Length: 424
Image 1 (cartoon, helix red, strand yellow):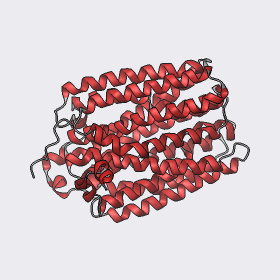
Image 2 (cartoon, one colour):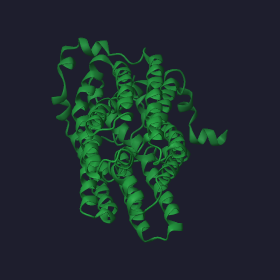
Image 3 (cartoon, helix red, strand yellow):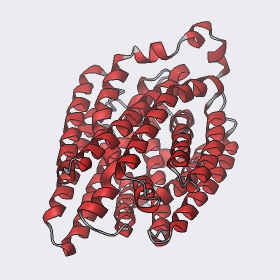
Image 4 (cartoon, helix red, strand yellow):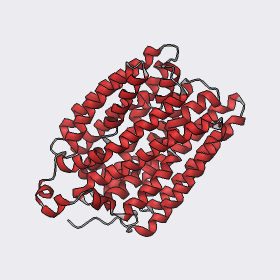
């Protein structure tokens, strides 16, 4: 019991009931489906459907552009109709898009399906953050987002284990089955969100306030704190998730000459680390500068890329253990990034613009997701794949430095150094 009280303080544990517990279940279920196909985009197109690497990375970049362009719409819709209707619509549309993707055999079909997934697949993250921020007190948001991220990875890890067992490059039908199952799980998650309908609608008072209802994206993008965060986040994501999704599978299979099954094993270590370490990390970072923590994230990701590069010179027997160690280090960075990044955004966001602020934060992911495939494709097309990890790691360091500089431009409360409860 003492260990439980240390990892999850009693006051926060007491808040994990009712709506918050239902929300966490939705998170877990949705991410089981995502875990089935995580990082298989390029491998699926190149090794299963036999499209060129250039086409696969270009389509990944184009998908990111489309997702990026649609993000402001989802942010505006979240503020006007509430997060729940957006989540329900996106779940159904994404499931249909995954079915189209699983059956695509031509470039035209693959392009259509990929763009549909891009539009609807990323629509839920902003509304989810907005809804979660409604379910907990401001001083508990960092911990709430951290626990949510742990459940994200628990779901992804479970899906990844299934993927590692099922997927087989010699049997394309296994990929089809994974994507179809992902579609089914996405529908189930949408149904579960209905249990949160009391908390997912628009805020009537804001819609009726002529001043607040007139504010929009011009006001959001006029917040220099948000713009500084987005600039730093883009570079940090280019040195992290964006490049990881765009090129890790290619690097492992084509540069390190390992089996596609290794990808699932590597991500198992990633997600397991997050699940086991997240609660302890949350306690360590509570009350510390969030911007400085993001600098530590950048440093840990740089170490990840250095190990990945060094794996090129390692004997075969040592390569997989090295990759697993690298993923553990990357995961520790993730356990710090997710709770503090989301907490910063939702601290500086006014309630009536929260959907747009979260969508804007998502734009940083979208921009990095747009640029990373193009940059990765350029490395590999110019036969510079072996230099790709080091170049990516340096980008992460620059993003981390900009995050540390952000500390001068936000309040102590937004930076996590002031945890006193807000007056009611």
